Amino acid sequence: MVRISKNEKIFLVCVLVIEVLLSFFIKMDMSTIAEPRAKLLTIFGWQIPFNGINIATVLNTWVIMGFLVWVAFVVSRRFTPIPSRLQSLIEMYVQGFDTLCREVLGDKRGRQYMPLVSTLFVFVVLSNWIGVIPSFWRVFKGLPHWMVIEEPTRDLNTTLGLGIMCFVIAHVSGIYFKGFGKYVAEFFEPMIEIGNMRIPNLFMGILNIVGEFGKTISHSFRLFGNILGGSIIIIVISNLTKYIGLPVFLNSFFGLFVGAIQAFVFAMLALVYISLMVNE
Amino acid sequence: MEGAEIIKAAAVLGAGICMGFGAIGPGIGEGFAAGKACEGVAREPENVNLITRTMLIGQAVSESTGIYSLVIALLMLFVIK
Figure 1 (cartoon, each protein chain N blue to C red):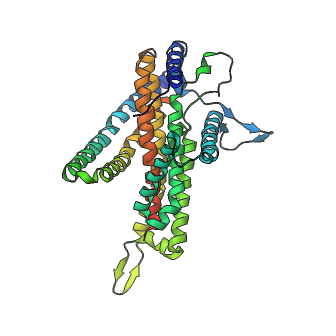
Figure 2: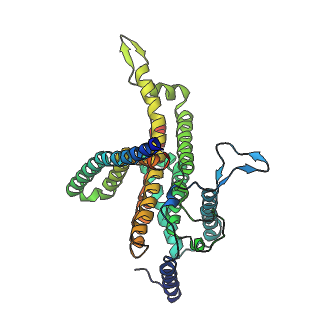
Figure 3: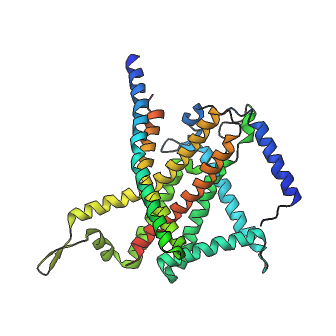
């Protein structure tokens, strides 16, 4: 049973009251779904390639990264033998991912890949959860358009970047642990056997190579589509009910529950792709 | 302007049809996976963590076709003017 102190109760009630009051003023009509995001097109007179940078995504990503670095540096200094609440949460999370990685990858390599997989999970889960916080300051007019809290994973650039990162890590570690010849030969299996000769199967090779790119694309589009679809459903149904009551449950389902599940699936699939490449 | 309106109407209609048909496959697939996971838990209740994890990953993989149709539907709704 988690005990909540009096100050925290007061804080929670204040947040709830502010949220209910502000919900009457926030006008997020349906056109905000489709409107183009604010973009940074040039930097010091230099044209940014690929149609500029999405400012809201970058700022929200920096907020999450700053929070994670703060937890890693400041909170871990205060660790004690008798754990506090935050410390026992962190210990549970580290231990859970440690056992998970060692089950899939074996004792030695599981320890090597545990930091990557657990960091992916915690970054993606915080990215999915940050959209639950309403942008209070959208009530005031005249503030710049990019000052908004929204999920960085709503942007395809973030998820595709993470997916390509997992692709590169999996294949480089496959080459490193198995050797280049065996790594290439695995794409052309099953080999055609004529007598004693083993000829690489070109048809299976093409299928496997296309399948590798398809894995990366589905890996990143899954996260992107789930989060974008969930946020669109939240906005549409909140508009139908005029932001009274229902958005709380919608946010807790599509924001918190689906966000946690999808982050776990993202990290687990990264682990599985790495283990497919690394294990013999 | 009549042609543009017909294109917009066709895109909206196409988005609805795309989402409707695209939701059939993942629904059947995820339900099948969940049912089999229930059978597995009933047979071996001590392996519930492993079964749940495997079920979630399998469901997420079979969900990706539904996500593709969602992305296509969104493209048709918002990109085609």
